Each structure stands twice: as structure tokens, then as C-alpha cells.
Length: 259
Image 1 (tube, rainbow, N blue to C red):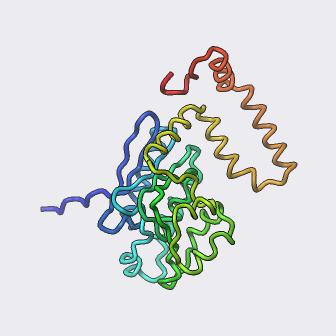
Image 2 (cartoon, rainbow, N blue to C red):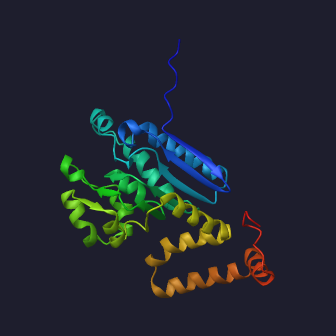
Image 3 (tube, one colour):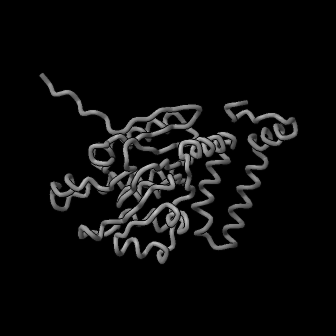
């Protein structure tokens, strides 16, 4: 008799255009095992196929994510980079998908879990959450996850945490720019953000996400040229006509699910 398939570690739901993806590997504090990373890819595929308006990444248990699965990494064949490739692709997908991604964090975040969280556009954390980049304490560096982290935080603001592995709290994380919201009611704050996304036209929201990542890297003249073209295109588009008509007529636009 064949062994039953392993229990899933990642699941998702879709509600009013928002895909909520839940990490549920509580036995290892939602560590980034091969199975968890693979299933996270599958749930992102499902969200994209459903044309979700936003993606919320949340967790079960007392930890959002403990980082790499050290037991798996210790047993890996020397030189095997498959774990890293899968993780890199997850970070890129969260950063590059045109839909906003929101991390909903109510438990501790460590090491690679901070990179997973930092790849989301908006990060809502409970006031009690703590963080630590503990890689140096086991003889490695926060290498791959430095890419999303250092796109959010100036190096000098996070150097101490990366060099020492020291723990820091939610207020410091917000102060340095690592998280966007500290809340006493994380689900309520996330729900309000999702309502805000639903209120915007899908393409306008997607273009705004692109602007946030694209414009800072441009020189000023090129930025004005590119954004001028985009502004003209959007203002003459169907979404703008519908949005301005809805404003005049004091009604919700057609893309709002409550309309």
C-alpha cells in the first residue's frame, strides 16, 4: 500500500479578488523547506491564474518564518544550488507580480523569513513581533535576502542587525523602513489595505506598483519622459473615463466589487 501524500504546508483562499496564502508548517516554524517553497510557487500560480487583485501572505503558529530549513541544507549535496534557485524565484515573484503583495505578520521573523517578508510591497506586523538576521551566528551571510532587504532599508540602518544577529522589535523595523505598518489588529489592518486595493482600477494599481520600483532608478529627465507618456495613456484610457464618471455621478466605479 502506497504511503499517503505528505500534508500540505501552504494553502490559499480567494475572496473578492484577494488571494490569501497561508504558511502552515508549524513543526519547523514555517521554515523554508523544499516542500514549502514548492507549494508556495503553486499557490502563487493559482493566484495569478485567478487574476487576483492582491496577494496576502500570512501564517499559522507563533512564527511567520524561521528562515532556511537548516536540517535540509545540512543534508544537501555540496554545491547543490536548487534550494537557492527556488527561494530566489519566490522573492522575485512577490516583488515582480503586478498585483500588490501584503505580508500579514503576527509572529517572530528570522533570517530568510525577513527576506520573504521584505519582498512584499506592504508589510503589516503586530507590535509584539521581533526580528533577527541570525545568519552570521551560524557561519553564513544574509546574502540572497539582502536583495529585497536593501531595496527597502539603507545599509547603515540595518548594518548592526546584519553584522551581529541581534534581535530588534517592530517599532525599530518600521523606523528603518523594513515594515510599513505596526498594528494591534493585523487582520483588520490588512483587510483595510485590501479594500483600498479593490477601490483602485486594476491597471492603475499595477502601474503604480511598477512606478514605485522603476522610477527611483531613472535619471530625472528620463523619469519625466517615461511618466509623461504613461500619464497621457492612462488619462485617455477607459478606466479613467469610468473613474471620473463615477466621481461625477457619486457612485462606485465598475471595478469595485461593492459597486
